[in-house]
Image (cartoon, rainbow, N blue to C red; front, side):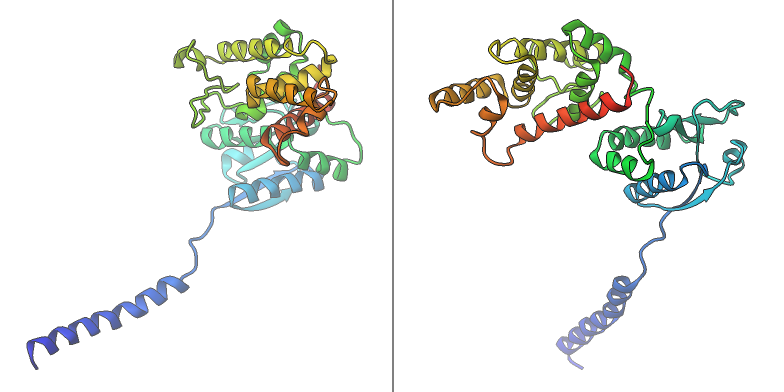
Length: 303
């Protein structure tokens, strides 16, 4: 065999060896998913089961749901990984921690060592409860039972204080914060906006904007100033214009108002001005989404 033939033979052998390896990798089953178990109370079991199934779907785990009323010690023993229990339950073991309150005053309990899981659950609850999907689930499974929650986020007291300083309903300001940052104080945007209200300003340092109280104060005062730019509008319309300007920029909204006046439209109404934006524009969606979330918060949270 010549040297060239030997090289060809070696290359061919290598190719033949690789073919079954690639085939095996392509057909190999995906790695097994994590398996978890959750105990849900028998009262409102269908509703709770749907919540847990939604959570399992969102985090891509296989969840075994067990109806019943097991003691909280079941978490510590490893019998279950997650439990839904009444918020006012007594005799809480030291190694068990609760999420923020959910529907009907229930909380999700996990082992105290699972701090990352608890943070994830709290974020997930916050985002889900502000969604229209959650509204539909309540209407479908709770048959009109009132659902009053005791908090919106861990920043409720700061949001209340900031809202009081500008004369706003705190739940409206909370809706703004939700759509700006999902209540993540460390949130940053690609344009450099920071914190709960996504402030972008050269007047404040990154350290100042990382302070939740300072961030809320700056953002709420800016909203209040924007609200005052539209004196010809009703209070609710002024809020809509302020939200639009917060999202799109006060200069852009002012130009839209001027354009509406030129066209003979009633520029004191946001819907008339919004018609001048392209269909599906992000600012139109932003205003609608904030107000929808505000309506939801107004229904389920005490003022």
